[in-house]
Image (cartoon, rainbow, N blue to C red):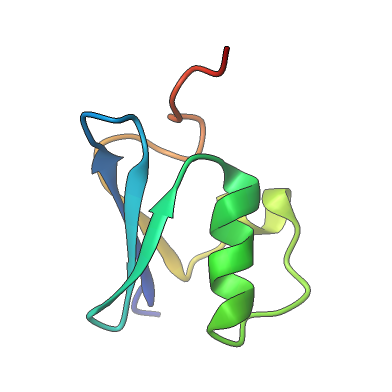
Length: 71
């Protein structure tokens, strides 16, 4: 199965750019935000663990555990 969602490495601001099928969805700062982006493109009913383990997600520059530190 080919990944539909690409999560890029963290940028200078810490967020990770998210793309799906060539379109930019936005910048996610957590698995929760990524799950919201996925819901917007029709991949509903996925919780954070589902998103982290999904074969539809291609992680670049670190896996689902790599997010910016929160204060």
